[in-house]
Length: 156
Image 1: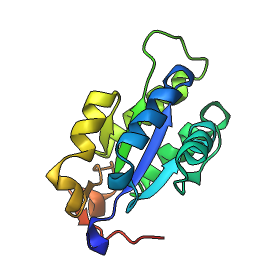
Image 2: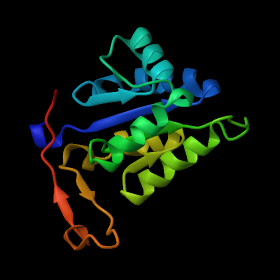
Image 3: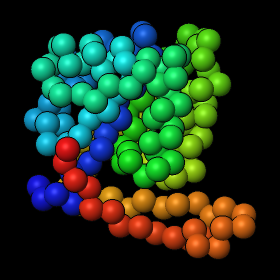
Image 4: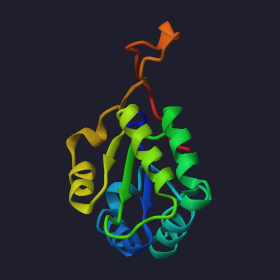
């Protein structure tokens, strides 16, 4: 894999899904190792402890980590979001979660919200290709309209 194919992958899991996330990461550890991994605080700490992978930690989701991640997506610094959600448990920070999913959709970030979709993403042949970030057009900002930017990712 060359430098343009390294991805910045964010890993997030609701409390009841953290074990599933760790199991998923263990299952795909060899595929994840070459990439730059980011995670909200508790999820990332548990993944790192369980697997030994280097994870760049943000704050815990309810303490602002979801918003930090959203800002990174808006800045073109995240290629893939693996967010294992728990659809049966109400979340006190549901507004932050919805905002994160909205910004991910707006910037056409690849999103997987369950293990089946995450498997398709991590096993895709496109994982080894350069990412294609699309910046949404903003009113009054003609320079960004329909702008496509091929960004060569660098491993940190």
